[in-house]
Image 1: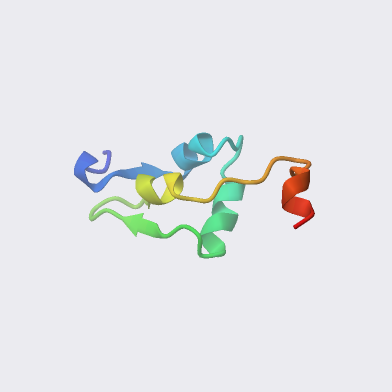
Image 2 (image 1 turned 30 degrees about the vertical axis):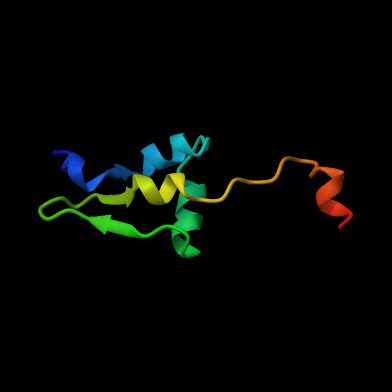
Length: 72
């Protein structure tokens, strides 16, 4: 049973794929750190995340960071 599409909820595994992670452990860290909030659907034991919250996470800096960001 999938969550209703109007709620725009995705699984933690889907969030990991969107963010470019091979495993969900990095997403679990984001949840524990408070960057993402878990949502539950009535009658479903699985935890979901808001697609909007996942896409609104800040982008990581490239490695190594550009010199103009270091020498400010």
